[in-house]
Length: 343
Figure 1 (cartoon, rainbow, N blue to C red):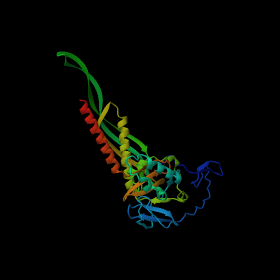
Figure 2: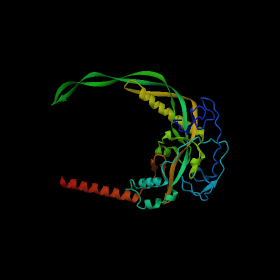
Figure 3: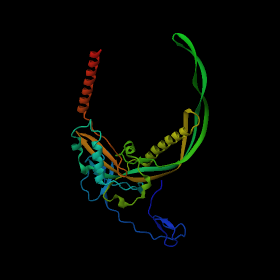
Figure 4: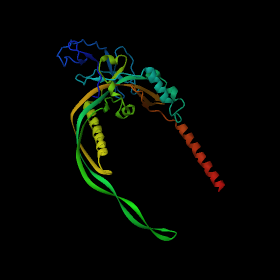
């Protein structure tokens, strides 16, 4: 992982800086007394039968609505044993009040073709929920072999005949030609930093729209981060997320090789990638969700709880669109009539 931040201290015996999670000092071997873990707050788990999201919330919460799809069709469940443990977390930097203001501003943008009563229909502040969403992060050593046809431009002078005022005129021009030749090579580097959503409720294409997260703020996970917040259990398995990430890395490496190629142009680039030393981390990232229904259809607002980047869907007013189209058509007809009268 990139620059993982963890609480640091010094060894009481030699004064050497040590990580708070270390059991022994790397310089003098001093054994640090093991601290008792803070008691973990009891949590209950719900599975949405509508969208498949699995969310953990505090024990005292009695009523529950799915933050992903606004469904009340939820069932309690117990998570399976042996699941991958969360390793890192980024805390919420955006408060609930700030998140609500982000939503109001987002809702007010681009409202020319939106229903007039949209703001009233979506003004349900208690539905705006902060949820820790699981993401998979992978790092790996990539080794590539590639080959491509490299093109280099050269120019020749061509003589041609044209006519000016009915008379032939001989002129010259530069014609570009391309010389092609095969080139192959190897490319390798360590790649990391791509996040794959571990949530069925937050598909990857939606997660991409609220990226990036600032991964330098990652902290070692402690249960205290979840106090007062919901946290989703991962529903996208590690193997599936790994393949998605490696596919992304392959395309990233292909693009990098393409930029590196000599010559003026290229074609038939082929890249074979092999990945080794693949490491995975399960991390929780802060996201605000608001699911609302307008005339029976579900719409969602999603906000990055660290940076404030927002995305979502809004309904269209086909009445307004039709009126604007009618006005535009009328203007075109009037303009055409005026042009005909002036001729």
